[in-house]
Image (cartoon, rainbow, N blue to C red; front, side, top):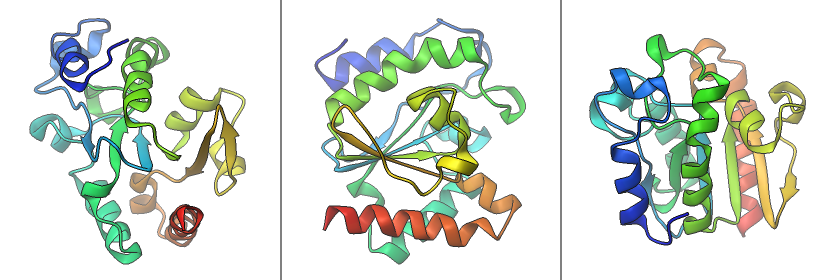
Length: 182
């Protein structure tokens, strides 16, 4: 474990712990306020994120930015990261060995940020952080407390692009998160 951001990020730059490094353009470390009360964790980088080296900059990220705007949150106020730091081919779900290879980096980010709330975006984030026994459909919108951190599982913004009906629940979940901090 690293006790500072520079060493942690440096350790990821040359990472070859899984096969995802073979096709990456950039690692997608994380972005935002390194002392945020709210941390968002997604699945993994897509093509736009791999190109820019920043999480949630594609269509799903633009949707998330709109939600932030509507809630009065600035993207710079929260911290955003992913389960894996390199893009899975064809934007597929990260395989278990890939997620496991990256989880200590993410755990280290959580330790450094010290968020009060972690929003788990989608099934991959939920299962890798809280356990395989959780399903996003049943856990979505319900607070889960573990080790002094409150977790709010919700839909991944990419799911909203496929199913407009999920936008209302996503919005409701994020409002719940904002209200919890008041």
